[in-house]
Image (cartoon, rainbow, N blue to C red):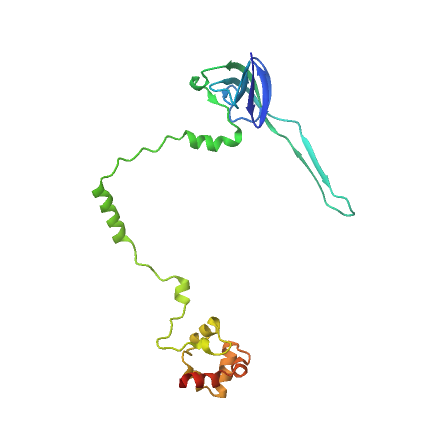
Length: 233
C-alpha cells in the first residue's frame, strides 16, 4: 500500500520501508513520528486530507543538504556583487507503517517542523485550572474595592503645559491676523484684554515684537487702534 503525505510544504509518495529526506523535523535520531497530513491512502483520496489516516516513520539521522551557492552580480562598472552559500537542514527517515484508520489513537508523536518547536511546547502546556465561579456578592465587593483603590486622575504633561484661560479676558482673535496660536502666545505673555494692548507704548511694541517674534505684525495690522475701538465697545 502507498500513501501521499505532506510535510515541509512538499508532498511525498511513500510505501512501507522507503527512506526519504524531508525538511528538518523536531525529533532526534531513533524517535518514531507520525505524519497526520495524508492526502491519499491507496485508492482513498482526501478532501483535502484523509480523515484519521497517518504515516509512521522512524528518524534515521539529522543532516545538512549539499551546499547551494547564491551569486548576484549587477552589471555596470564598479557595481556591487554578492556570493553566499547555504546548506539546508534535512531529516532522513524510514517509513515503518501506513495507517488507513486509527491514527488519532496511535499515541505516536506528531511530526512537526523544527521551526514549530516553540509553538508545540506552548500547545502541550496543561490548560490553566478554571477558577470556581464567583457569587454576585463577591463580584460586587471586588468592583467596589477596585473603585476605592483607583488613584485620582493626575494631570498629564500636555494638560500641565496648557495655559489656563484668563478669567474675564477678551477674545483677542477679533484682532486682525490673530488666530488661536497667536492668542495663545499673547496669553502666555500675560496679555488677555484689549485694554492692555490699547495702552501699549512704542517700547512695549518693540518688546512684544522681540519676545514673541511678531516681526512688525503689531504695527502692520494696527492692533493698538483696533484694541482701542474694541475696548470702547
